[in-house]
Image (tube, rainbow, N blue to C red; front, side):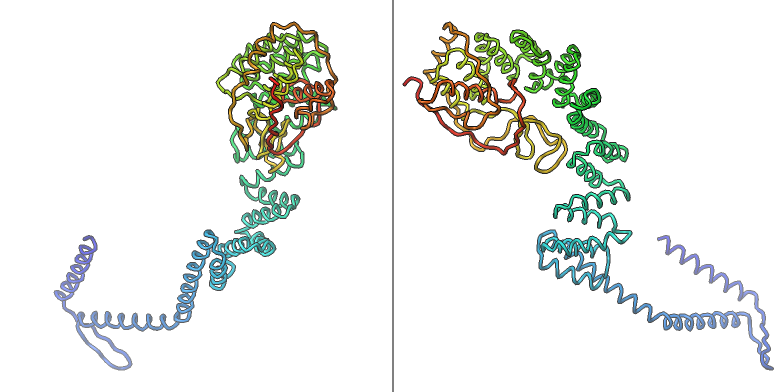
Length: 521
C-alpha cells in the first residue's frame, strides 16, 4: 500500500512538472558546427531525457559485456559450492549412521568441490576413523592443527589418536597446546587426568586451580578434586613429613567432610602426635555422616597398648552415635569378642541377623564364626557359618569401574579417572537364594550364653588370608590349623582390626559354594 502511494506521488510530481513547463513556453537555440537549431523548451527537455536514456542503455550493455567472464566464473563457483555442500551434508549423515561406503564417496566429492574446507577436513577425518585408518586420521588432524581456524579441533583429534595408541606424553602435549589457546573443558580435564595418572599430585592440584579460575568447573567440584589430591599427597608424605601430611589431610577433610580416607588419615596422624582428643572429635564427626570400618579401626587404635576393655568402650561410644547402622553393630561385636564379652557380641550380631534383610553379609557370617570359635570351639557350627559366608550378601567395599579394592585409591586402576572409587555394595554376578538359619543352629545359639567356657587360646595371625583359608577344612586336619584358618578368615574381613597388609585389587568374583557337613551329624 505504501509503495502504491509513493508511486502515485512521484507520478503526480512528474505531471505537475510537465504542466508547469507547458504553462511557461519558451525557445531553446543551439549553434553547433555552424548550424543553428531552434526548438521549444518542452521538446529540448524531451530530447535530453531521451539522450540520457540511450546513454544509460549503452553503458549497461558495455558493463554487462565487461563483467560477463566474472559472472560466469561466479555462477560456476556457486554451482560447485552448492554441490559440495550437498555432498558434505550427505557425508555427515552417512558418517553419523556408520555408512562408511557412502561417507567415503561423499567425502571425495566434497573435497573435489570445496577443496580444503574445514568441514571437508572434518568429514575426511571421521571417515578415516570409521575405516580404522588411524594414520590417515592423524595426518588430517595434523593439517587441521596447522590452520588457524581449525587448530583447536585438530589438536583435540591428535590428542584422541595419541591416547588410542597409548602415547601419554604426546596426548599431554596436544592437550596443553589446546589449553593455552582457549580454556576448554576437555583440555583442562585431560591435563588433570595426566598429572593424576602419573601421581604428580602437586601439578594436578595446580590444574584444578586453573580449571576453577577459567570457570571450567564449579566450586564444589573443585573442592572435591582438591580434597582427593590432597589426601593422595598426604598419604605419600605421611612417613617422611608427618606434620605436612597432617596439614594436607586436615585441609582435605575440611574441603570434603565425607571423604573417609582423608578423615582416617588425619585422625591417625593426630593420634601419633598424641592429640587424642582432637583426633577423636574428628572421627566422631565423620562417623555420624558416614560410618566406615577404616574410621572404626583408627578410633579404636588411637592409644596403642590399650586394653580390650578400653577398645570396647570406644566401640560402644561409636554405636551410640549411629546406633542403627550395621557398621556400628559389627564394630561392637568384634571389640566384644576381643574383650571376651560374648553376651554383648551376641546382642550386636543378633541385631544384624534379625534385621530387615534376611540374608546376612559376609562379614557378619565371618564374625559369627569367630564368636563361635572363641566361645565354644563347635567345629560343625563354625563350618556352617563359614559355609553361609561363601553364599552371603557382599559387604560394602571400594568399587571403581567394576573393580573392588580393599583400600581406597585416588584414581581408577582401569580408566585413570580421578575420584572414581565409591564405598558401595559390589554387584553380585550370581545371587544365592535367601535361606533361613538351620534348625540345628538356633538352639545352639541360645545355649551359648549359658555355657561357661574357658578362655580361648589366642593363635598367631598369618601374614595374609588366602582364598583357601575361607574354605572349610577337612575333618581329619589338625584342630590348631582349623582354628588358625578360621581366625584368619574372620580377621581378613574389611574393617576388622588386624595387622597392616598389602592392598589387594581384584575383579568381582563369586565365593565357592561349599555347605560343609551337617552339624547334626
